[in-house]
Every structure is written in structure tokens, then in C-alpha cells.
Length: 389
Length: 195
Image (cartoon, rainbow over all chains, first blue to last red; front, side):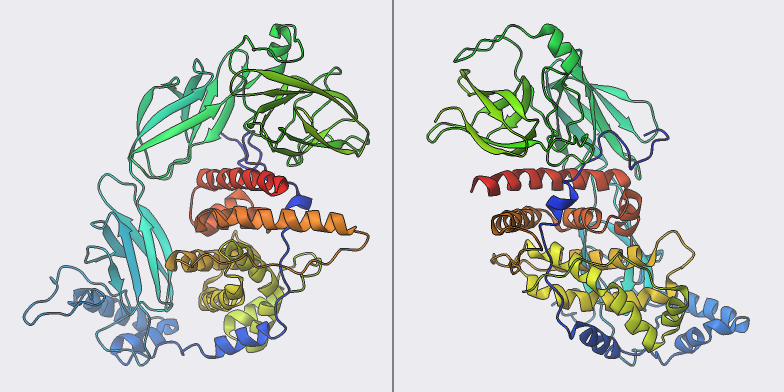
């Protein structure tokens, strides 16, 4: 995205309104939680007093001067050590041992056993033959990689493999854990599924100009770059364009799905005369409103503005809206619903806000027939609407 | 379980107390814990509740603070992250690690005692509780990473940049995860109402 504030992009995933979210309450903490936390902190082992020149040097870290020289020498010595990579549950046969090609200990740790047990970091990578480094030092693999004796503090973990994007993470030392790291594939084939099929799809990467990648049914081979966010945008005449972040799962093939919504101005000009009752629509497939949490379009005076309970940008009219719960009659399958010509999605639909007054609710079933119900609501009224009683 | 009262506006630890905590002064540690434990608990509870393991929330709060104090000396008060954001980031990563480490059996949701708020009718309260359960179930269908992004955004109002920094992901990935959370919420809220 070029120069745009990531907080205000048109395709931000607007979450439900605050009053909806706050319905999920949290219990109070127990009165003794603070004491338990403090007791747990008291139980923390003292900073490892590794009885080695390295630890003595580490303790003089703040002394400066000569301490830095000794530290440098110690780091070289540590890097030159041959360390054993321990695979969990495995035993080492006599005469065998890991190749002395890399170390698994972080700087400032030596062959001297620490005075207190320090948990290990176990890194499980996918793919298993990734290359792992901790603070720049290679770790012998394959997965799972056990890094023992990691000193307290933050360490830089790097995982990489040809054909995949590298991953870097900061890990905390002194706290044992298993860390799964899945490398995202660098090359991905995108299968484009877009409605309407004639819509053109563009791929945006970072600040670069969008590249057209095809139409419905096309496939596009993407070679990803590390640190780049991708977005896809679909557009078609008569429809509102839509742009969304490209969420890549890491699989080699991935579908990209986009559905466009009719441009109300274009739809108003082209809309054929409607008739009530069962009839088969003669037009392009009903567009789905894929973003029901946001409804910011002005539907015009003949079609009251439809408010959505999840939109935080709706114009809050001083008149309290009515709410409709819309479903099909018992025994009927789900139906696509439109209210006053605006598609709202599949049944069941809950707490749809509408302006007080009269509305035309259409139920379109999968066999093509349409049933229409007219409903009249007052301000603040809640009503259940079905295609038939 | 009684529900937490309406939280007072979030506050940050003052600079002097933070500095004391970074020096390892115990009184300052306690003040820090008392200042942030509510928010950390709320984060852990919501990230866990979908798995029905709400009893572990307080355990994870303890784990989180162990990590916090282990890393506290390196926190830069003048840096881009607020202390609350930094603590919530560490806590979220701790819960993600826990969720990925274990495969819990299916368990009932943690239920919060339903008590009407002032002026709230029982039917309104019931509807609100139903919505809350639906949100919890929706979150329960999300991966640990998506849960973290959603809870940090929805309940702790971190910005996309803050979430990206704390979870060490791209801003685009934050948005992608929030889209997934939104889809899950949409599906479950409709289903809950239908029930």
C-alpha cells in the first residue's frame, strides 16, 4: 500500500461494535492471584552462576574495559566448542557423536554445567530440514532442534530453507519451551475464484503498482518476497471494487476468493421492473454482501439506509432503528435475502437494523423461485420475518 | 464466577516505579503486577476460554509475568512500545505457546455468572450472555495466532502496528487474521441467535 495509514484502509476488517464484544465477560481474578504471582517470582532461580571464566566475565559485564576483551575471547572459545545435540529420548552409541560443525549453545554459556538447571528450547521446524541459527550461530539439525543452556534474556532465532521465506523470532532464554516454526512457501500458485467471473483481479505487493493476475478460473504463480504484504483487488463494471489482504496459508496452492457487490447507482439504472410472488430472476447471479459488518452506502430516499449491528461507521440516526430476524419457514431450505433490493446474505439473519417503515423482503431459493414479504416496523421494534407463516 | 466490574481506564506504570522494577525492587514488582494482572488475565481468559480451559487462565498469568520480569531489564521506556502493549505482547505469545504445546480435550465453555447490570432487564441480560457465549465459541474455532490478534485488537485496542510488532508479524498478516476472526464471529453469532 502506498503511503496509506494501515489503520484506515477501506478494507479494514471492521470488528463488531463495542457493546457486542463486551457481552463476552471475564470473571474476576481470585483475590490471592497477586500473591501467587509474587510467590512464583520468588521461586525463580537466581541468575545462573555458571562457574567458569565466561560466567565470571559475564558478571563483570558492567565493568567495561578489560571485561569486554575477556568476553570476546570467551565468545570465540564458546563458538569453538564441540557440543552435543541431544535428540529427545535418544541415546548416543559409543563412538558416535554429532559432527563438530556447529554449536547449539548461545554465547556466554560454556561447557561448565550451570549451578542450576536451565530449561532447553526445542524448535520444531516445518520443513524438518530447515537451517536454524540462534544469535547467528548455526544449530545442528534436523528438526527437532534442542538448544540447551540458553542464557536468560532475548535471543534471535532464525529459521530458513531454500524455497521458503525465512522466519526470525525473538525467544526468551531461561524459560523452557517447545517452539513450532512453520516456514511459509516462497512460491505459491493462486487459484482465482471471483464473482462476477468477468471481474479483473490485480495483485498488490507493498508499495508497487498492482499487477493484473487474471479472472475467474485463472491461476497465477506468485514468488513471494520476505517482509512484503500482498493484497488482491477485484473490479468489474457495475460493481464496487474490493481489495483485501492476501492471507496465505503456506500451502503450495491456494484459492483467492472475492465476491463483488453491485454498485447501487449502476444497479438502480439497470434494475428491471420487479413483480412479487414466485418468479425466476432474469439477471446475473445475486451478489452477496461479503462484508455485512459494514454498510456505509446511502441507499437513497426510496430505500431506507440499512444499518448493520457490526458497523462502527454507520450514521447513527436519532430515530431508533428496528431490528429484523429473518429466516425461512420450518421445512424450507435457506434462502438468499434482499431487503428493498439490497442483498443481505443467506438466512438465518439476525438483528438486522432497518429504518422504521415499510420494507420489501425477498427470499430467493436455490431453485430460483422468489418469495416476497412486505413488513412494516416501528422505531425500536423487533420482528421476526419469514417467507411464509 | 462473578464477573469483573467495569474496568477503570487503563493506566500505565509511572516511570519511577518502572525504573525500580527494572532494578529488581520487590515493591515495584508488586505494583507492576497489580497494575497489569487484570488485563493479562482478561487476555489469557479470552484466548483460552474457547478451548474450555479457563481454569488455566490464572496459571498462564503467572507464566506470563515470569517472562515479563525476565525481560523487564531490557524494556526501553523511551522506545516505541508502551509498557502495557509490551506486557500484553509477551502474555499473548505465552498463551499461544501454551495452546500450541497441548491438545486439550473438548470441554464445556467456562461460564460466567449471569448478573444483570443496573437497569438491564433479565431478557436483555440473557441475550447478552448468549452473545458472549457465541463469541467465545467463535474464538474457540480460531488458531492460537488468530486468537491473539483478535483479542489484542478487540479487547485491548492495540493498533495494527502494535500487534504486528508484538507478535512479530506483518501488518498485512494482522489484518488477514482479523478477517478470519470476523468470519468466525459472523457465523457463530448468527447460529447462536437461531438456537
